[in-house]
Amino acid sequence: MTTSSEEILLQVGQVRYKKGDGTLYVMSERLAWMLDHRDTVTVSHRYTDIKMQKISPEGKAKIQLQVVLHDNTTSTFQFVNRSGPAVATRERDQVKDLLVQLLPKFKRKVNKELEEKNRLLSENPALLQLYRDLVITQVISPEEFWAQHASQYTQKNVNQKQEVGVSGAFLADIKPQTDGCNGLKYNLTADIIDCIFKTYPAVRKKHIEYVPTKLTEGEFWTKFFQSHYFHRDRITTSSKDLFTECAKLDDQEMKKVMSTGVSDPLLDVSSFQDKYHEETLEKPPQTQNIVHQNMIKRFNQHSIMVLKACQQQTVAKQEPNGTPQMNGEVPSTSDESHHEVQAKKMRIQEKINYEDLDANCSQSPSSSQLNLSKVERYLHGPTPGQQDELLPDELVGRAWAGLQQELAVWSPHPPALVAPAAAVSALGELTPGGALMKCYHDESLAQLVPEPLEKDLRNLYMSGCELLRHFWLCFPPTTPQLQEKAEKMHEALHRFHSAKLKPFEDRVMLEFSPLSQQLTSHISQLLTAAYSKYEVWQSRRKSAALR
Image 1 (spheres, rainbow, N blue to C red):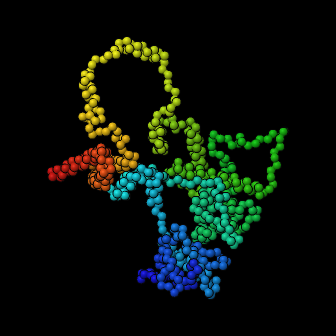
Image 2: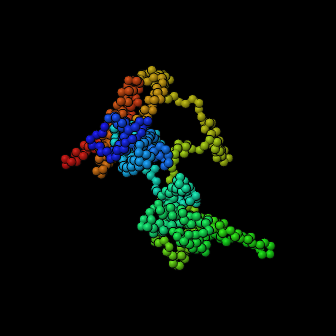
Image 3: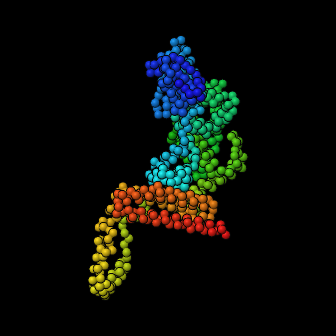
C-alpha cells in the first residue's frame, strides 16, 4: 500500500468516499484512502497538489471533509463512525487540524518572476519568437536571454513601489459578514489596517500600546469594531471602552485644525461663509439633534484626517532628509513660522513658474520621456489634407521668369551620347533572357518568395541580428567581461548557424531550389564577417601572449 519511507501520522476508520466505506490515512507526504478489505490505495493526493480543505458546517447531518486540488477537482470524505456524530466530528477535526499543520509546509509557491516572464512573452510576440529561436533551440541559455536580449522589456516594466492612497470610503468598504451565530466577521487586509493607522493616529498609538503584550491582533480589532469609537453615533459611552481616549484626542485635533485654518496664503476660506444682515435676514436656527451633529462632525473629522494623511505623504516625498517628528510632539513657534514662510514661498513659486518653459526642465530626473507604442505613426509625417503654406507673389514671379528663360534656350534634340545600335544591344543583354540575365526570370525575387517562407526568413534575420548586435558590442574587448562575452557570443553564432540557418538553407534547397543561394547569401555574409573578426582578434591575442 505505501512505501517503506512513508510514515502514517493518523489513521481513521469508517470514512465513506463515493458510497464506499474505507480507511483514511494522513501520511507524511500525502493523504490516502483505501477501501475496506482491499490492499491497494483508491484515492491518493500529495500535499503539494492540495490547494485547500473545507469542512461541513456545524449542525449539518453529514460530517464531511473536502480537499480542493490546484486543478479545482475535489475529493469529499464523509465520517460515519457508528459511535455517533460526536465521535465522527472529533475524528474529522483531528484530520482537519493535522492538515492545517501539514499543508503550509508543502504549499506550492507561485513563482512571481516566472509569471512576469510569461506575461512579457505573451504581450510581446517579437520577444516570444526570439525566445523560441534562441532558447528553445539551445542557442543560448534562458539566463543569458533574460539578462541580455530581453533587458529592454524587463527594465521597461520595473516600476517603483507606489504608496497606496487613503480612500475616503475605506471604512464603508469594510462589509461585515454573518458568522451564523448572531455575530459579525470583518475581513481586514494589510491595506485597510494601514489606512486606519494613517487616518487615525490615536488607534495606531493604542495598537502599539496593547498588541501583543496585552491583547492579540484579533482581540484588538474585535474591541475596535465593538467600541463606541467606531460607532460614534451612539449617545451612551461605556467607561470600559478601550478607545474612549481616542475620541477625546480626535476632538482636540479637530479644534486645533479649526483654529489653525487653511495654510494656503492665496486662499481666503472666510470669504466662502454666509453673511447675514441683521436688518433683512436672520440666521437659520441650529439643529438640536445631537446625533446629526455628531454625524456631521464625524464626517468632517474623517475628511480632515484623510487629507492630512495624503499631505504627510507628499511632504515626506518632498523632504526626505527632514527631521523626524514623534507622534504627539508639538513643534516650536519658530518652526511653525518658518514652515509658514516656506509654504508661502512655495505656493508663489508654483503660480509664477512654468515647468514646460524652464530651460533646465529636460535635465530634471523627474521629467517623463516620450514612450511611443507605434513609432510608424509618429514618423509618418503630416496628415493628409493639411494646408500648404502659400509662397509670396514676388517669389512666384521670379520662378516664372526663370522658367521662361530656360525654355527659350532649350533644344529638343540633345547631342548623341550612345549610338542607337549600341543602345539596342545593351538593352537586349539586360532584359530577362539576355546574355547578362540568364539566371533571372521574369518574376522578381519578392514575387517568388511565398508568405510563410518570408515570415520564417524575417524571424531568422531577427534572431541572427540580435546575436550579431551583442557580438559587435563586445569590440573592442577592453575588459575581461567583454572578452568572455565575445567568446560566448561567438559560440552562440556557431550554434545559431547549425541549429537555425543550415536547416533553413536545406529546406529552401529542397522546396525552392531557384532561391537557395539568394535568400541566405546576405545573412551568411554577416556571419562570415563576424567569424573573421573573431579570428583576427584571437590571432592578435596569441601573438601578444607570445611576446
